[in-house]
Image (cartoon, rainbow, N blue to C red; front, side, top):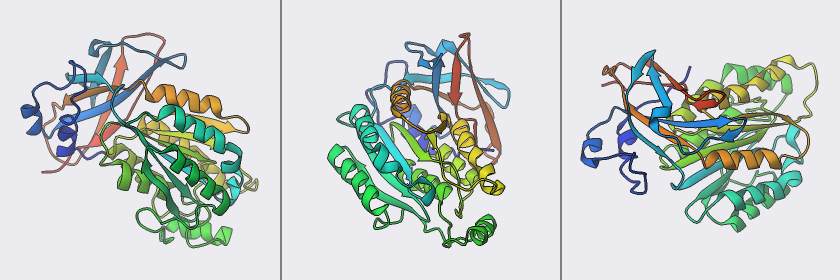
Length: 333
């Protein structure tokens, strides 16, 4: 189950983008007082290729099976882009940064325009902020070099430190004989990146994770990570890379499906187990980020009762794949 708390931020975010197309927000005065506006970023592809040039008539939107009227619609092509890159530097992912540093740097060079920004975060026993949001490719490259040589251990912890308080964490720590938060606090990193960094950012945004998908020590759960990403309206793209975790450790292996769920629930894409070149994946992500539609509606359910509302977006176009977040929790009065 996903959770998104709709607040005044949802309405305010529509006011600060004068570059939005004519089909987007109209009278800003009406938007300032409307705190019930639900914003749904949507990606539509055909055989993996983004479908461009659509109008709102191509989409249908339901909340809890009830049809909703799409009030505002635009494509976030020209809005600033913010990317958070989370890199697993735990023992199972040793050598990942060194092997793919140039690929990641090239991706950032291609995707970041003059007004775009990116940040680098590592996850091992803690989630650490290596490079805060910047437009400088040089700063990001230096951050990647620091990860390669020091593993990010000298960088500050982002958000709340992981203390190993979750019951699952204690179990895994005993089995792994690891530090208080195990070897990989992955969900802690996703939660911290979205809750403390992405949530208050306007415009296009996305989180990209390079990991084997095995969390061995977070205080935060997968559900916490999904809730934070949904609240931040941030799709999560996950790239699962081959790990060296010993076979037969079934409780850990089972957690690999978490990255699939994380991407699926937030409107991103989960890429399967990779062993070699990931340049094509980064090319696909770049193309996807440049073609996001935004549907906005005012729910016919006017209750502010803290209940979960399921969102379903469909299209009249056959042979296409549509991705959007799955729902939200209505704010309480």
